[in-house]
Amino acid sequence: NLQRMTEFAARHRVRLRPHAKMHKSAEFARLQLQAGAVGVCVQTVHEAEALAAGGIDDILITNEVLAPTKLHRVAALAHQLKSRGGQLGIAVDSAEGIERLAQAMRLTTAAIDVFIEIDIGQGRCGVAPGEPTLHLAQQLALRAPSLRYAGLHAYHGGAQHLRTGDERRAAIVEAARRLDDTRALLAAHELAPPLITGAGTGTFAHEASSGLWGEIQPGSFLFMDADYLRNDRDPAQPQFEPALFIKSQVVSVAPRH
Image (cartoon, rainbow, N blue to C red; front, top):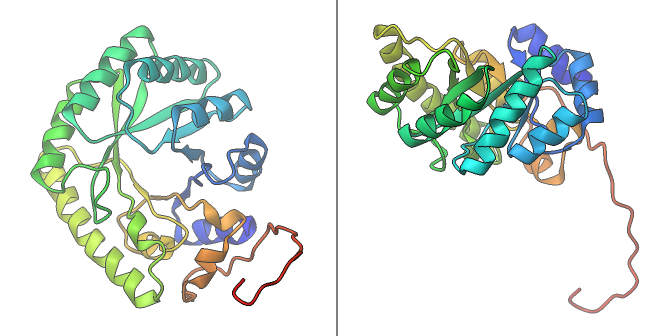
């Protein structure tokens, strides 16, 4: 699975940053880095700290962090990774998130890569496309050099488990339209995103071929799972196979269970 994904990313000239929330293991993260990944994603500060303690040096927190105590830990981790030549990134989707992060980063001389999370259809985290994203980019630019405007985080989680290939493709086509319009608006104000990162195991082929995403974040592909295998297979994506199994035994049978 790892080899197939690595070859796909190289062939399509996109950076591979697998999401480590699936395995939460520095050992598996090292295998991914050795195979060609540029770094890993995590969802929580604790996951980032654990992987850093295991020797992983390039980590992106693909989530918003607002609690001051956690932001102090983010600043400390950014300092730790910088001291050994690594880098920490994080997502923001609000003015308050930028201000709180900037306050926390006063505790260190390190800089942190900041990605503005844009809602491209998930309807969960993320600022709205267009002018709201531009306003955050302008605010973020004022916080340099401790907050480094690194680009946009554009992930459509709701598209990952749509069963048919046509459904998934349509969802990402619409997401790409919103993203491209916003990218053009940012560029017109001299804030073109240096990188757009996102995508998951269900749709990464569409993001990779769009010409918009420069980095993909699939995670579940490594071990695969039963629900992803229920999706109609997309011939544009490599075929991944289950790498973990649970051995169990039936000890009792009744008419209905």
